[in-house]
Image (cartoon, rainbow, N blue to C red; front, side, top):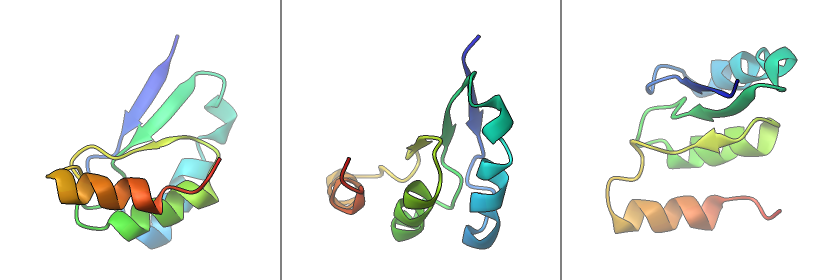
Amino acid sequence: MALRVDFNESLRRDEAIARIDGLEPYAHALTLCEQPLPRDDIAGLAEIRRAVRTPVMADESVQDETALMEIIRLEPPP
């Protein structure tokens, strides 16, 4: 079974990393964590993405082409 967690913009930067890392025991089934931070905190999403192993999905943050390009620009290299 594949699982995704959608935080619906409910976390703050200071708690998101710990919460996502806390899901690590379920990494075998967890495919991604969706939108942990408020939609306007694109830099925060990039910070979290660099700090955790679980993929982070931007959903509500992709409000327009400008936001999408900023998300791509801040994505860490593979």
